[in-house]
Length: 323
Image (cartoon, rainbow, N blue to C red; front, side):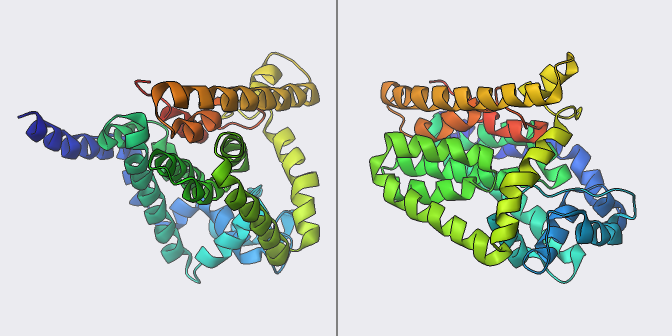
């Protein structure tokens, strides 16, 4: 009887989550392509993928010209992603923006479902409950804005599942996927390096390959520009953006000078990274759940920081566990 009820819930809960979580995105999917592209972050990703390797994707031009082809509005949406992300976007970019967009949407949905399935054993809760939490919560924003965070979440989930199955090398491989959002991937890499020695060779080679991919796909100049100029300027521009949930934003809202707030946010990120990594190992041992080594640190760094948007809080949602 209990098994039958569990099987029914495994179908009903995700179905209900899809209905509730996709009420807004459903209407958005039904909009004409032109309207959808004008309100979607994917336009910036699509254009950056086209530009990378041929021109500088971190400058206003030619990014603005490409975006205006689809948006038809003033301004430009920057793409502060690392060069290795742009290399992947070049592969994904199809000649037709409409087809490319729906491939992207399908990939985001698949990443959320796969992450729920992979995380369930480490959290000791049904995968259907994990998926419902994603879709009813900030996963809805991921789909509506077509953001890249679900791929980072999938990397974290894959690393947790691999640790749960005593596959540390595979965990290191999954962790590299999480670096598509560097401030989420970095805590995971550090935690694996500290608590999972057998993952270190994979992490070392993987980071080296990401660096090589960045230089070969975008060039050394653009790679350095991303680290030296694009990230600091983007953080400064977003310090008082109303959709931020970072410590930097909170401080600027009470009158703290922007650069002081950015410094405090950076220090809080480091402090929460250290605390998250330290706690992850202890929790994993105490609860006999190795996957917590991968799950806890990325969630910790979301408590503070300089650049935390609502869409990224989905990474913290999956840290809720009976442990």
